[in-house]
Amino acid sequence: MRELFIYYRLRSIDAEAARGLVFEFQAQLRTQYPQLVTRLLRRPDPNDAAGEPQTWMETYSTDPMREPAGITAELQTEIEAKAAVLAPLLVGPRHTEVFIACVS
Image (cartoon, rainbow, N blue to C red; front, side, top):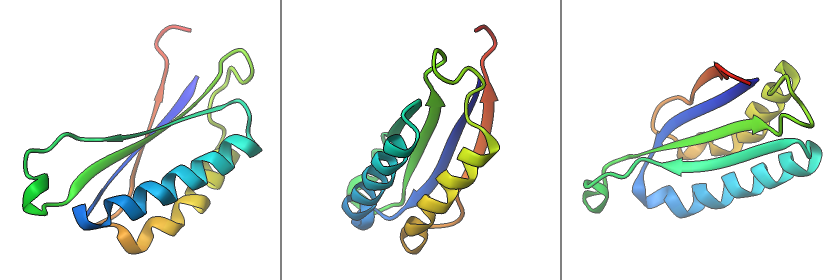
């Protein structure tokens, strides 16, 4: 099963705006693709108070009973298109890593 792990950095001051955008486009994606499972994670960082950039990660997988192959190329393209709204808030590029399950 193919899964996506997408990480990026953003300024602490932009965290609330980014969270709202991510939650919104992930909800849209889950409506379009009911088999989709999404998460938004943030690296715990003691420098948050200092205004240092935060590292965030979006994860995308599918319910294996509904879509055993996982994230298709088509769905990955749709995820990236929706995530383009984050571009003005990012410090550097988004990095996408693809993993597959070792055991199904």
